[in-house]
Amino acid sequence: MNVTKEEYKALVSERSPKSKTLAQCVKAFAVGGVICCVGQGIHDLYTLALHMETTAADSWTSITLIGLAAILTGLGVYDRIGSFAGAGSVVPITGFANSVVAPAMEFKSEGLILGTSAKLFTIAGPVLVYGIGASVLCGLVYWLIGLMMH
Image 1: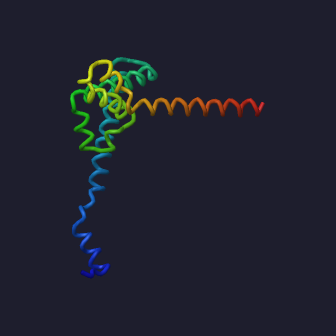
Image 2 (image 1 turned 60 degrees about the vertical axis):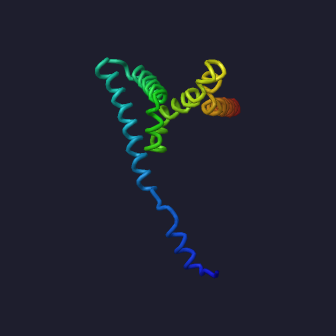
Image 3 (image 1 turned 45 degrees about the horizontal axis):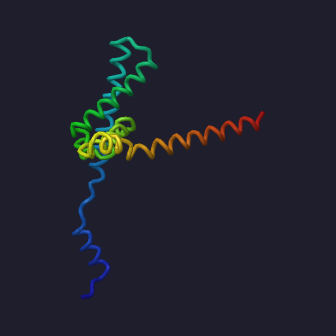
């Protein structure tokens, strides 16, 4: 059977799933924005209602967002948010908390030590190791450049 290029393109176009990129981008943007707005609301609560200094409120806001993301991951809610929003749920601090807690929850049946504790840093561990390593390396280079400039 001989098929022309145009017929082949028409057949592929007909059978290929339609792109949902725009809808996915809108959902990611909306959910990421909501997470950021929740964070800002928590920060405002700490600064305005509890009269905290900005630096203390910054820290407590981060702690609160990490805690909420960990709890929502443990309850299975964050996974549903991720399924709906895709990359919108990977807002840095909540997404990182989710990536630490999710493997631990998955392997909790293996026990506290070999399951939860061993898997706690499966995904986040390499990020921490390479992030800390890169920051130390950059700091050393910066320090050496400073020594050479004097």
